[in-house]
Image (cartoon, rainbow, N blue to C red; front, side, top):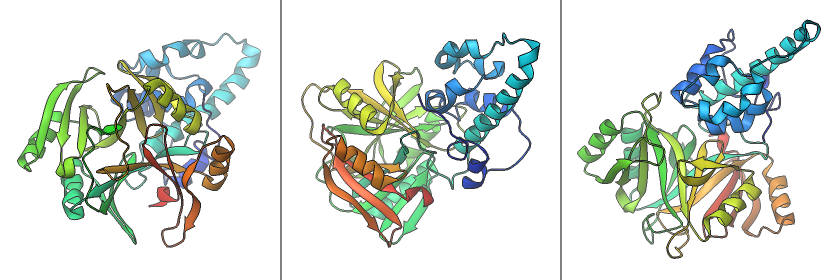
Length: 357
């Protein structure tokens, strides 16, 4: 279980790091954020749940009650009057940390990547091979409210939770049918999103009720990129990153590899086996037959942003993880990078510095 450390993921250090308002604390904002699903409950509580005696208003949040019901002992106090003052002081400090963590997850679009987990890992980017970079950029800006990103050697867009990067290259095939069949977003109004997608001349593959009980749809865009949308009516953004869907080998073995390698938090997403990293859910299924890896396809690779990347890579090497490209620094981009491939064939880039973009 992850812990929030003052000055890192929580505490007043996060206020400066994330440019958050230093205003009077309002605990009700926490419960409202959870109720609106601006904070994804399992990801949120992965970082903080067991540290805080949470407010009853949070516990009563309909969509979060299931995830935090086991925390009910933290809501009641059995302390004597002589220890109550100490308990209140400790609780106040915990609430400050919880509140700042919540604000970091609700930070404006400029701070796209979420604070990392205890291993220093957070979702970083999805890198697409595309024929027409400008077309893809236009899609993401107009359809999903993305913010354009232009740096020397890198072109892409930013949405809450991740970056989408583009490389002008003929892909060897689309995303569907590979180990990562598609990636998913949340949108506040699915009907409006589908109407805009169709109006732009693109295909809606299907509409259905998703595994979590909400309206969902599959989209197909240029270069056969496949995107799943899920409706979240209280979402404050036009779109946010939500999940990557893996279909590779024995899915439980693959899931455990991500848990062991990146300290992902194992959970269920609907009836799917899954795991959470800050900013993204990783969902797993076993395919009927083995699928090809991602390298060279439209979705070429996924990326995780890692704090202290050089040391992290050494730790993985000590565990027997083999790198396709070892750790190195790219001075002109201000990045540290390394590449590896997961056991099912998903190409993965590790970065340090992308959170400053």
